[in-house]
Length: 273
Image (cartoon, rainbow, N blue to C red):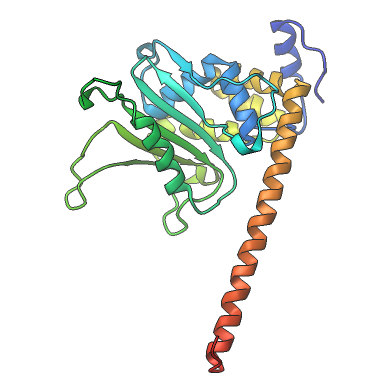
């Protein structure tokens, strides 16, 4: 159970270490994902260092450019929970958590990436464009015929794979395919981050953080955010919205299947339609 009162850092650490049972909202909730990364700079820095394979000492500054007030509601028409980061003043990174497959991720992620790539200041040469990364954490398999835990996409020559530019990068981490993590993924610790994001009990969180000390502040931030009533309310609202979106998607998919079935039935019976 979570305690409602958290007053000091030592108190937070004590209560987190003694927390047991199910986590109310874990990091696959996109609002919780945003709140934890926004609350804890160490988490944001360590995650970027891990996924981009950049030594920590080379990360001098990480700045979230679209900060929102913790617990603040976001208008559904303007809903945007991707995190826009400026790394070292010269690289843009978008981080996004997505648990519902709308069958449009390639197009969606490219749209986000292209918007960030259009960052040349007026009057400057195009060669000054800042590198961009879009990192999507998906809790589903993006391509059913090509499951993969950690995939990096870039613009390359279709014939020989020659790299067109290293400034345009799209990364996908499939949280449901941790078992497919390569030795390289494990060396970087990306699989540990995925396990932390997917953890559903405090015991899991504590075990992961014990094996990965750099994630201790992340674990405490997850606890702290789960103890904030305003954040809880927005996490609940996101779960309700996602449940509704899933229902609508299933309904549309069912209707499409039914239309295809009826169309085939008419064709088999030589009936014009």
